[in-house]
Length: 556
Image (cartoon, rainbow, N blue to C red):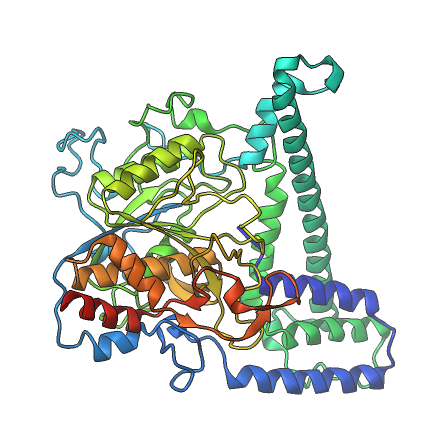
């Protein structure tokens, strides 16, 4: 779970308000806050994210977003056409609610397998793999839910060998590995300290919000009006401070749902010390494989939903939620099937599981693989590389989010990646950054990784509305949301123009982006940078223009 830009704003505003309480007079506070509230409310009323903003027109003359043109394409280019082929899109993720009302009819079914007979009918090594496979499940139906970060696993492994040793006591043959140990140790300790700081900040924010609610005797921020928060000068200092906190929260657009999300985030960061950042925690025995044997591919179980399928359900819905059933979400692609591969726990995915998921998808007919996950270390990268080479050789398009670290991945390691460890790169691969529904300097998502050489394209990834477990729906943000937008558009093109090879479809997507000729904030900073400097194309995916070009190429 990552901290969203909105949660970060809440943390900053509340802590800032508490630290500055009492530094202005009541009149000054009231005037400043009312002015801010009025201006921000007016601004928010002009443009905001809609439930289908990521499908809207790419032209600002039509819609107030730099979007994808998906709906325009259906209305103008595909209205009199029928798809020629059903496309299987593999969702490598945390698991997906395959019974969701807006997804159930789109879930891939392995027709060569007889459900529930406990026999590997199709001979692929996986018993009763009806809708995909769970590579982090146990043979008894259990699951890996939480796991460690990759840096934690590396730290634990190397500490067994080098902890407490000084460099001059390390054998010459181990010097290089010892230096790597020091690098990993430093990275782990920094991450651990960062988590401690985040836990403290979130805890302080929660305490401040609780103080404000109790002082003002309200149970929900949604029930408080701006008029009730006006400072008259007759209040006690405590009441003034409580009103300031509530005013800043409401001016930032916070709702009670956001505060609940803050509670969820606190549970996440507080749990990392027990799980993700705990070198002594290792749940792999649940799976029951020989973890060190990378050729051991047959393990796991067929429960593709798992215990926590929030992320994977949201990602799947972006690609292929049913479009014409008048229910919550609208997917990008209509004539597709979703193959579900549960691979990503609450923690970092393991290279062995990623590689086996890619191989499973390619071997079982997927034409597109969406990978909305990532990490900073990949100790068995050669195995992932081999799987990507295999999928690439079959013409499978792999699409991954660029990551949520606000980092330049031209110079910072981020995995998975198209670049092979021993040189060369995958041809059929797209790395996707996240753009926002806002068209000003905040067009690029503040969390999105970027890279002129390594990130190919941007796509909507802020406040994207999609499916959620138990027939629910909600907006989420991340390059995890941008990636399935691109995967869905690729599958849409494939379904109408199956005669085009994958390499050409990738070229079409890159050639038809909406070029953005403006300066934006570099992610994670307020430093101005041309949008064109953040990816190889300098643009946002445009489904409308891509489908037009696909039609032209087909008729040549």
